Image (cartoon, rainbow, N blue to C red):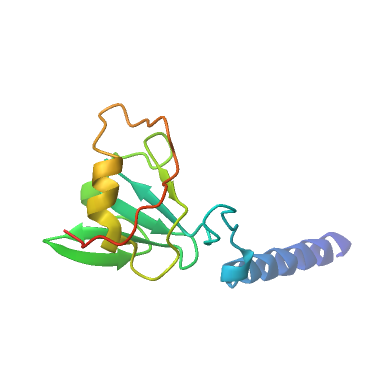
Amino acid sequence: MKTLKVILVLAIVLVSSISYSQNIEVKKENLPIDKKTNCYVRYFYFPNIQAYFDNLKLVYYYKENGEWQTASELPKNYGGYSLYNKARVTITDYDDENPYENLAAHKKMYPYNSKGRFANSTTGNVGTAGAE
């Protein structure tokens, strides 16, 4: 009987911790701030797939059929692309809502690289360029 109570208590604690971890909301104030640009480090840019990841909303921005889409996961046609082993550029000079407005500048600064690596992994002053 004592074992049953211990198992029941552990199950309740486990379920409670899982539901709590799913309700954690990222706040903008918790994101790191770039000292040079005074912007929150909110986005990663993936040059080889021309997509962005938003650290605040925890979503990806990517183009599909010429239109920008937002989703918590990349679509299946991006399957096989490792987000951790390939190029990921930290955007340090933009923390507004539409990072893809700077796509033209980011494509120029970080062109497609078949090896997936870049010497400089953060952006400088990109400015606002029109989306392609």
